[in-house]
Image (cartoon, rainbow, N blue to C red; front, side):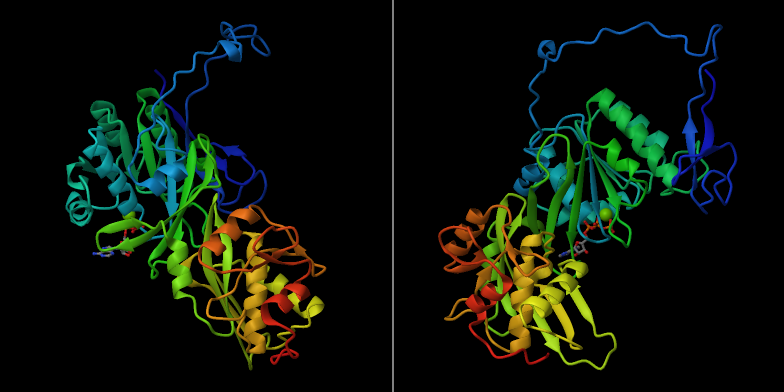
Amino acid sequence: MPRPTTVFTCASCGHEEPKWHGRCPGCGEWNTLAEEARAPAAPARRGGGTAVRAASARPVRLADVQAVKIARLQTAIGELDRVLGGGLVPGSLVLLGGSPGIGKSTLTSMALGNLAGAGRRTLYISGEESAAQIKLRAERLPGAALEVPVLAETDLDTVLATLDAERPEVCVVDSVQTLHAGDLTGAAGSVGQVREVADRITRLAKARDIAVLLVGHVTKEGALAGPRVLEHLVDCVLQFEGERERTYRTLRALKNRFGSTSEAGVFEMRQGGLVEVQDASARFVGEATRAPGSVVLAAMEGSRPLLVEVQALVSPSELVPPRRVANGIDRNRLALVLAVLGRHAGVGVGSADVFVNVAGGVRVDEPGADLAVALAVASAARGVVAGSGERPIACFGEIGLTGELRTVAHPERRLAEAAKFGLTPTVAPTGAGRGAAEAGTLRAALRAALGAAPAARAA
Ligand SMILES: Nc1ncnc2c1ncn2[C@@H]1O[C@H](COP(=O)(O)OP(=O)(O)OP(=O)(O)O)[C@@H](O)[C@H]1O
Ligand SMILES: [Mg+2]
């Protein structure tokens, strides 16, 4: 059998070179060539060119395909199973990304522990921690976390051989960036290595029907380290996010071949591991303040409504340009909302610093958050408490560039969630339904939430 050869592929243009170059001869980009293993090409036969080299295969009509209904593996972590689309599919590959210390190892250890407790064959492979370190974590986790067999190893060949010999039903590889393929020269975690590691694990997992949870680190920018091709390779990409200092974490599916990507799970990090948060709305509403600059956003976390507090502070600044700080929402979205507030609703923040924060470390990535940001900023700028009475005011809606308020998905679920906590009427776009104080424009929404207020103080 001829040995696989190595080539250097440009991550930018795909150009291939037999030797490494600092600059790609194909596209001229610097530092884009990464080493990859290549199976040697089959020797050309006589009559090559376009000649067919293999026997043909018979395509099957879809209706005649025998599809066996496979039972999913339940991790018994409700939020994780829901995000996966009802549990782990045997033989599937799931990539779990998240920033350092967010709880990736904790979540995967807990899932394996539960599966081991349910009598499943499991294996935890760690290239990051020693067996003793993994045990320390497992000791504080509930369930059968201590029953899980572990292997502390970084050599890819050893890992694959062990997987082949042990044949677990579910296995965790923590992390894809720490494994090293001996036949490639690059350091562990380099683009070529990560690609090779994921590719070979995938092939073995599919052949042996092993469900694999691949843990991956994310870069400072929030993208999964390693090439985007990893995301194509796996069946499911999960993102574990939140701020390390805060207790709340959300788990989202960015890609899922076996379920919806609109699901999200909320967790809290505690001494005994990650705890599912089913009543997140109740906590956030309970913690919401009744002060200028605070409103409640009726957001959607996947198909589930979630009430979160959005806070804003507008304060005079000496800085040029003034600060625009956004935590938990997109910074560009904040710039847009401030521009529309100034241009179409008479709330100019001018040279003041503006800080916007979603309480609890939650991140909201949906246009429906616009109105909450606008109301929080306007309330802070005017020094007026939004809404009247004891309870905070809730709202949702997208803001258009001409100052109009636009409908967002699932208005009825958002209104029902707000009503559950007595936050009625909820300020919402026209047509939202019962329980809403409907507004067609941002100006009308401001009137509904803040009343006819004097001109903005910070203008
Ligand atoms: N005794 C404890 N009580 C409460 N929380 C703890 C305790 N020990 C660890 N943690 C939390 O667990 C987090 C680490 O979790 P974990 O090791 O699962 O993260 P990770 O995402 O795997 O990190 P890494 O990227 O380093 O592998 C810590 O940041 C801390 O918040
Ligand atoms: Mg870890």
